Amino acid sequence: MIKSDDFNHTHIIHKLKILLQDFEQAITGIKNFEQINDNGDYQVNDLLVLKEWDPDTEGFTGREAARRIRHVPKNVPCLNSEYAILDIEENQSDMPDNQDPGESVMSESIELCIARLLLSAYQNGRVVLTISLITRIRHEQYSMYDLISALYSLEKLNYIRSSHDCWIITKKGIDHFFRSGDR
Image 1 (cartoon, rainbow, N blue to C red):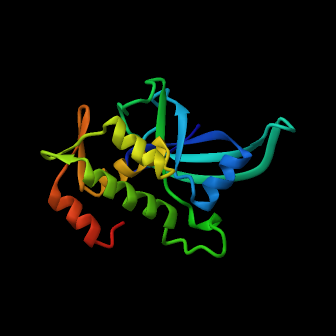
Image 2: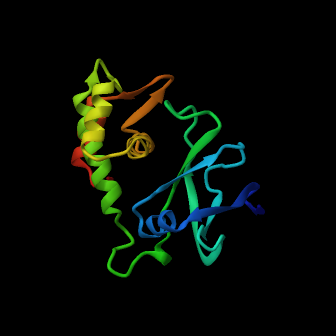
């Protein structure tokens, strides 16, 4: 870990070994999270350096990508407390040439579809994550990570907020989400 001081706030650079297929998904923007063992050191705005690891050669390939940590969700339902999911941003410098660095089509589509599914689960101001809702989300080929990532992205946009064991969502917030260009 390397520390850098930025306006009296210390940000840490974390190095993380990542498998070939996961590294490729991270640099193309398909994967915008990392699941890690949570030692409590990861903070928003820290830098995560992904180092590609080849298990066949049992060594690093030399490819690296840097990502800023956007969000570190706490108390995630259905996630063992020993682990954490880091919401990481795309780095424009290692995007493929045919993709506009300003857009993340995959994330946007997932968030929009999950927001629609969440709207169907809207009850008395709360999103109720029932087994049937999770099954519908899985039926649409989204993983639990997609769901969690979408929930936290919506939370960051202030369209929903978490409260203990559920997410609070307002009809106004969801309507604004579907009408806005923030997605």
